[in-house]
Amino acid sequence: MLVGWVAGRTLPHFVHAGCQNLVGTLRRLMADGRYAPSPTGALHVGNLRTALLAWCFARSTGSRFRLRVDDLDPADARPDLEAAQLRDLAAIGLDWDQPVVHQSERRHAHDTAIASLEAMGRTYECWCTRREIREAPRAPHGPPGAYPGTCRRLGEAERAANRASGRPAALRLDALGEEVVVHDRLRGEVRGVVDDLVLRRNDGIPSYNLATVVDDAAAGVEEVVRADDLLDTTPRQALLARLLDLPVPAYAHVPLVVGPDGKRLAKRHGAVSLAELTPVGVGPMELRAEMAASVGLCEPGEHVALDELLERFDPDRLPTEPWTWEAPP
Image (cartoon, rainbow, N blue to C red; front, top):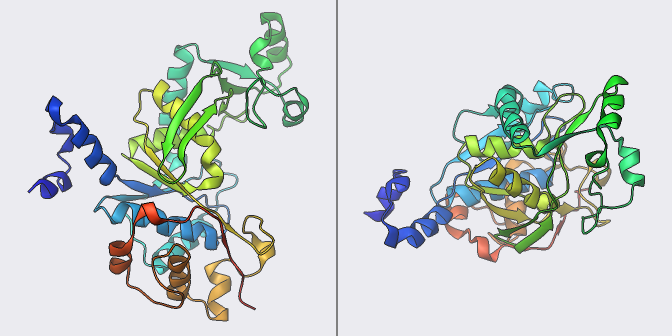
């Protein structure tokens, strides 16, 4: 009875104070997930493996699985690549709950969130170039590449001069050097001092960090499963969610797929996309079997139906080391 009641999505109405711990546990066990590719290239084996794992996290608990197209920059987004990405995801057997959301159609929501941060007095204009940021002394206690707060320290005369020059400004969050701690399903405690990240680029386009926080919350995403190269962004996004009074999702950062050289998978490693692999004998089902075997869901060469993969799926047994992909000859 309890399982059916939770599956009916009536959990928010369960408010008895003595059962708060149970509510929290059930939410973690039944967390809506998502996958959010950018339509700027073909999905490679690493992307597809992450998508498969994100789908398993959600579907194994009977939760919804959302698909979002991260097309923030219209100049880079290509509808043909988006269509190919959706075909590849469907080809390996993944399904998702409609509708597919496009970030480019949610600009008003992004701008509204930025306006809220401006009203809090937590933003400032920034005219720094990438080169200037690279050459500036690193912010105290900040991670490599952290913004050192150069434009935060400008006086009004300097700001006025920069505005008068016509040089476009980005908008940054004044993070106040806050240290944020989040828990990752695979990595444990993740702690980071948040730097003054960009909220809006100098061309007017909202930043990835801002948009993904706003859009995940709007879609009801409760658990973000993505590759662990994005682990360092997690404290930033958790801080933004808190400032915007949005729920902070649970996180699970899965290991990357790398080439034989140990570097992140890319075209230089040979056949890495489904379109390239199918002609050499690695079709959608063969690739799915290889990806499933790489995380211990089946034996090498074993073909397992998706429903059985879900029965076997155990997040606590997932590997945390990168998987090396060797393209077929």
